Length: 81
Image (cartoon, rainbow, N blue to C red; front, side, top):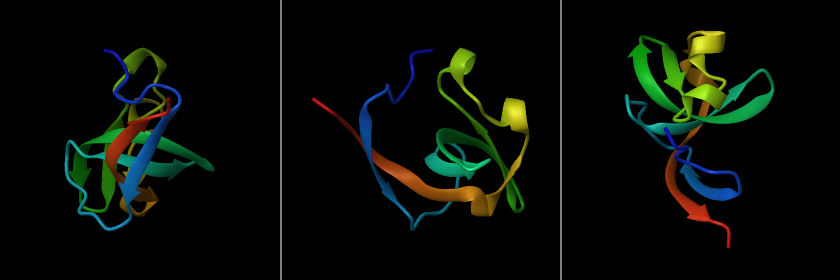
C-alpha cells in the first residue's frame, strides 16, 4: 500500500478528539512521534497500524499502547511544494 502521508507532508492536527478506529493520529512512543491509524480500541489501550505495512513501525512491533500516548488526530495533510 502506498503511504497515506509521504515524506515532506505537513499536517494539521487537533488535540481535541475522540479516539475511534480508522482515525489517523499522532502518537508518542519511545520518545518519538509517529503517525498511525487506530485499528482497535480496548478500554484504555489502542492498537495502531501504519498505512505502509513494509516500512511501518506500529503495534505489530510494539503491541498495544496506552490511549494517553495519542497526542492529536490528523485533520488534514498539506503537501509541501
